[in-house]
Length: 260
Ligand SMILES: [Zn+2]
Image (cartoon, rainbow, N blue to C red):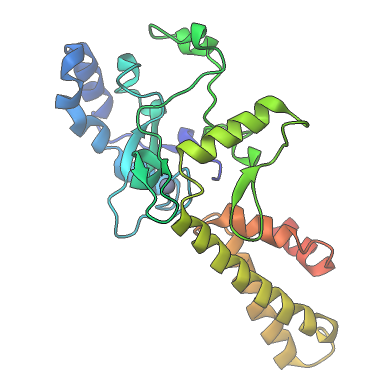
């Protein structure tokens, strides 16, 4: 998960007028106006460089969906609010059973709160809620999820360090299905590739800037690969950064992380 800046969302011409008309219609007709949120799918997708906001997998050949962060079933007044939309893949957005782990994950219509008695009943009351699910559109939240080198996601804070932050990450990993076996495998493969590149680059590093242009060029290629992995446009870039950070004891990796 990486931070998404929804302020940069470009609304198509007259979109807001259509959203206003849809919200003025009867509540049980919300889904009759699904074209309103579907028309924002491409602009939302652009903000994340075609990646699902939750798992950071590029949705190249998959359609993806506009997820209502606050589910439209319980928050009908937010059904046509562009600030309530997140671009998501099917695995994060819908309830699905992982064939390998047999575990069911996916957000569905879940939106747990720390205090259920504060659940909003009308527009404006959301300000009193403390949601448990992490929101990629809040800059302080994606960092609450960490990873290990096997590709498994985990809370950045242990229960003993901070019970609330731990709970938010644990529940988010579960409901966004960030521990889906295929996704964990994908991360693991990336970690292996990064480790291999780091190893080769580190062997070359002492010989760089010594007058051998071939060495310099070779080092640069390996560094470029690592920089591309951690770039915000890359798939699983938050994980790639995390893996790279594990090599921070190498001065050139530290320098690289500071400059990308
Ligand atoms: Zn996803």
